[in-house]
Image 1 (cartoon, rainbow, N blue to C red):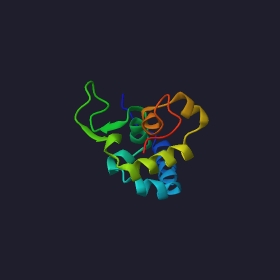
Image 2 (cartoon, rainbow, N blue to C red; image 1 turned 45 degrees about the vertical axis):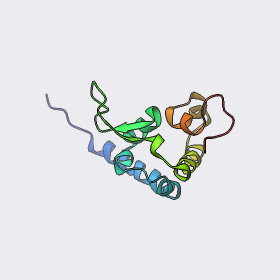
Image 3 (cartoon, rainbow, N blue to C red; image 1 turned 90 degrees about the vertical axis):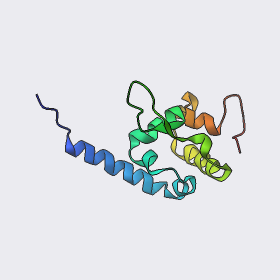
Length: 113
């Protein structure tokens, strides 16, 4: 039995991701994320969930970390905070994720600068 991706669904997902990036290009350009983080929605979601991105994140063992949110400077962190405030739903913010906690640490009313 062969496995075949549904090309139409994949094309639609990529189109939606590209449109999302265009819509938020002002803040994304200030964040200066590496291309690997912005390659797909799946890569972006991984960064938000864990606070870092690595090339081997689907394997049994996480390989070397290629990018960590702690690498952002103050200006980039501020742009990232604004991006998350703009794009995450209230439910996402309440649930929390490593990306949100990076700019709004738990038990803190003010974001990190």
